[in-house]
Image 1: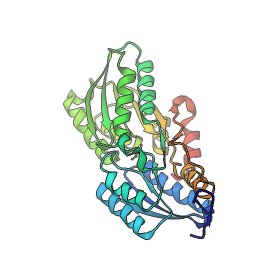
Image 2 (image 1 turned 135 degrees about the horizontal axis):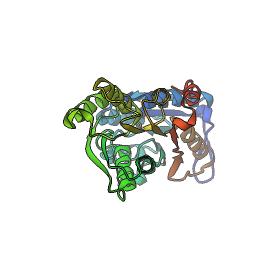
Image 3 (image 1 turned 120 degrees about the vertical axis):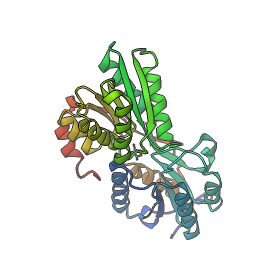
Image 4 (image 1 turned 90 degrees about the vertical axis):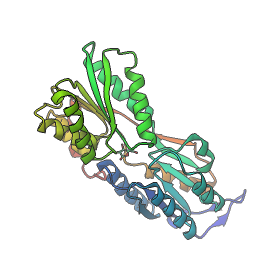
Length: 313
Ligand code: AHR
């Protein structure tokens, strides 16, 4: 890295000179694949060298990747932490090596706050609240048994999306979460867990709604419901998170009802914050929040589907 010294001992570097190591979780969902592809294109736009390490959903692989990035002397590390805890030692190593770490899309435990520069994430508690409020408004006073497909156990987004949803429905005594289990953010597990919910709920007739922490699990759940002779989107309400193209296909077909958007562009704002930090010493806010918005059938799902294609999906 060619660099000049700024007042205060900071190095002035242009984006073109930066090398960033990105410890990515894996490719568990359509959203994740889009995040990886958007990260590559955002790096390319800025002439940043991006090295991506796919951890295949394992924290130990992420820890190894971070250590390898430190050994290579990269200018910064992006980390999408699969779970919230267990990062202290490795992030201390990065800090000692004076390599800034930026979290993407998931958080770590609050005790680790000093160990990273900034986090580019959505407000995942709010996402759960948006989902819960939509459901409460849609069912009105009708009794409603909900089954919940949770994300990866220990992931900040799974904990928060559950918390936000529970808070939003807390005052609606007619809405009850009757079953809740992890589907690990994958389509296959979402289908498998939904099949077990349907079985346990007498063929699914008592299920009024499915809340899934991501769209991929919902797409799997929709398949399971159809195979069991249920009508998702009609007899069973669906609400999930991400806003990936496939859920708009399902909404357009009347087989899903709503989704809360999560942008796959976490890297763009992270690169901008990093460049400003490296070149001008600008310390970014601890949290760079991305937007979350609700989509339903009223939002012309076919048009949204068409517009999403090409945005990394
Ligand atoms: O951390 C973001 C979540 O991870 C997305 O909602 C999900 O699809 C992904 O696997």
